[in-house]
Length: 317
Length: 317
Image (cartoon, rainbow over all chains, first blue to last red; front, side, top):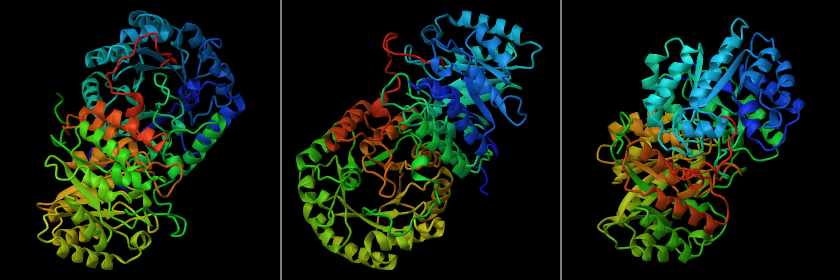
């Protein structure tokens, strides 16, 4: 067993977002039984926390129209933590009814992106969250918050650290016990990760800070490295890198869970996940979606899978 | 201008290996004038150091049969540093004749890979290097060394740090002033990068230590981050990520120069390279090769290229 790289935590807590964030970005509706099989394969690979679905309008987002069914297949299992994305009060009612462990509420750190994404101002988003918080009281369903465009906005460019801090404080004051910084369009860099973690730590006492990176510009795992070097323990990722970047046709979105676990494992950070099992699950995801996924370890295999000397060609160095 | 991340150097020195390492791995022969155009576009983007070709058997490696012509197009320019890979004495004679600034000699840190790659033992490789060193004396052509499989061997698995250290010492004693650790099959990890840099530093006084990563398992830039955190200044990369992994069909090889430069730029490390120019050059490389290259920034564009609000679709967070 490796010891962690200096400054890295001993353990990381992973949330798999492929079933929601990943599949919601795919153009096709994945049949419910295939979604359930994929989630089961991820559980078999040691994952325990899932952003499993979203309770959104089935007309607007048909990919998630089976939210209650997917949740029903796993709800009530004490060893799992199942969250559902919720855009409004109606979604929150459905998520509570369906038995989610937590609801994820989301707004952007930049006004233009919030307007574009949910068609309301950030102030209105926060007011809506307060209504949901009242609804959730006493139900046992926890509240989590995602801050979209936390590392930059595709419309406005840089996003001020203070905007992220203010939003995190507002989330905290609403009782959220887990706050994710979302790298919506792949603008996170190691330097702005470090900067945000430093600024947020003093205001998030008792709240889990999670990082959710995209690999849109190739530095997704370098950003995770920067987060680990700051001692951040919670990360979100998507099996195989499921879920494209909505902004650029050929660009990738979420970092791949198996690549993140490879980085963790080789850096001496435990996660409870089994790399071989994740590679199998990534293969299943690829077959379900019917296109090549951007994950790398699923193609190359684990590090010490040795080849025979006859099986390879070489090319001088 | 950003200040460098803590522990990072202020400046990095990049060597572009696309014209040799990249194009040598491609199945097709790229016409000489297209190679020259690609190198020129990289010079226009601010790069100054190139592994520009290799003097190998034109029967064994037809991709490099125009080595002297490619070198002739740029030789004698004081602002450029042009190296050529050389496998043996005959190649060394040709490289000196053609006017390379330096010759790159290479052997593997693992015996099986060296046997497979160059069909001789490591001891015999080093004996051959001594002959080349004698040949080079007084010619003004410098000697550089590459240590292949420095982070792991596809046949043997882990490679001992001491084997890398011993080989680096042997290179140093032959008068090499620049030594590269090659991540031949993508087995470098941040932890084993840190370990090797720590072990090599005391024995490489006055020698430039360079790191050459592959992104085969997705952690190429995380490894670069680890190298930077150790203060390493010299890196090798390939435009667009040209050059596949010879071991796994779908896996990627070299890290992409423009992605590395993006990481450097966003981490406050100067390199003299212009990201927009590199993105153009990566596009040219893609057109020349006729297939999609794995570089990410070439697809997504620079970080602050803002979109208009009408041009994008969003998908809730």
